[in-house]
Length: 320
Image 1 (cartoon, one colour):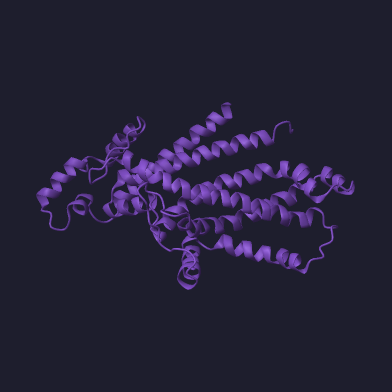
Image 2 (cartoon, helix red, strand yellow):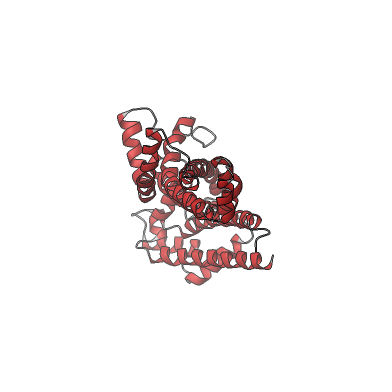
């Protein structure tokens, strides 16, 4: 429990440092928050009054302390345009959570299936592969997963739009929302989810395969193969439990990658989530809103890392 508490405190400290860095970086950006809110026609007196209203006349450390102190009580404050940040996050975070959750689920399922199947060719090489299609699939997995992991989400999103929206006309390229603030139809989620999941599937498939092959070097696995146990049973009962810590750590890291990528993908597909909110806050140099989005995303990632730590501890129980 004590090591876990130390790890939690360390992650909280890193999050606070990251939030302080956000304040510094936004403050160094060119432009003026008050002028961005009031417009080009604002007079110097109006700009000065707006800066006093927003607290921009205070030193940067004091502004950060005032904001972080309020956040610890659950109050994220107000945007430079006067809207409640709490209300904005409640309105925009659920669609992002839906998009990221679907992409993460697809990533976990697809990479596990592909990684296990790919690793099965190494764990039990004596099993004959008679199908030419299966042989070709095995040979294609390595370059395909490498390419998929290397391509950024915005490139994948652009290619998906060109192929499935513009050329084929099968799926919509723009998201339209209903009264609930979510996409009006399920097909509007397909391309954004794929754009987020494809790079992560490529990366995690390779991690799953490598972890399984490494775990398969254990003596008990070789004994199970020699005893004639089926490849599926060997993988699931004798190899996967030993590979699980590495796999879970990779999936936990994927949470942050999916959340970060969703902010870009949402902008491309006009998706109603935190992406558009963050884009507008950067244009306004609204440091409170930017830091609030970062803080919320960081909290979600920390929760997922804590879950991953619990799963790893469970999988390693009883081992020396």
